[in-house]
Amino acid sequence: MPHLIIEAGRSEAHYWCDIYRYKDLFFFLAWRDLLVRYKQTVVGVLWAVLRPLLTMLIFVAIFSRVAGLHSKDMPYSILVLSGMLPWQFFATALSESSSSLITNANLITKIYFPRIILPASSVIVALVDFLITLCLLAAVMLWCQFLPSWRIIFLPVFILLALVAALGPGLMITALNVQYRDFRYIIPFVVQFGLYISPVGFSSAVVGEKFGALAHVLYSLNPMVGVIDGFRWCLGDGTSFDGGTFTVSVVISLVFLATGIRYFRKTEKSFADII
Image (cartoon, rainbow, N blue to C red; front, side):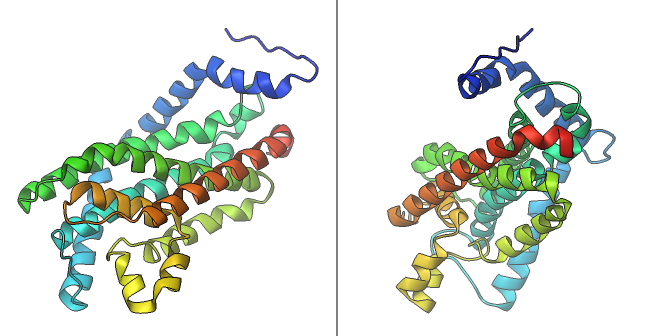
């Protein structure tokens, strides 16, 4: 049983140590969220597969058949799915983490634990969904007779980057959501808008070709551009890797994470009183 130690000038150090001491609570909350997500569902874990599958079919029907978009390096269905999976992981992680404090209000007001455990554990749900959807990607690649590149071993790097990109804003929004409940309405809009400004149904190289280098640089400020481009680079031999875009994504994601942690820690003491 963890012990609460109050020591002058050492509260910050004790806080980060407490995160390790409460690791059992972290795993329990993550397991609870998974059970709640899939309990009493008819299709079960297939829900995680149906959403990207249906979205992929819509994108292929509209952008490939109607708009005439195509891919030179891989089948268009794989191009869409390789962009949809990391984006869905990011969107689910952001949504789950940003609402984690409100949904656990009763727990916050009763016992002490590092509150950052709540948004961090909620991201596990998105990670499990993502691992399930990788099976869908593998099935589509077999159907299209498309073999991944050896660079697929670097895939965990871009998964981690997507997690960091989601957790930073998630920490800030979940803290703001405690005091200003209107923020819960912002997330669906951000997710919907972000889907269209991220290279899910097309290659990010198209932006530079059509609008110039400056537009491509500004477009790269979206951290998911580097994640999705890197995800596709891991799959296809002919896909180039833009180190500049990846660097921008890493820097922006880390800045958001540091800002989110700082704001979360600054407002954490008032959560139990306000919520």
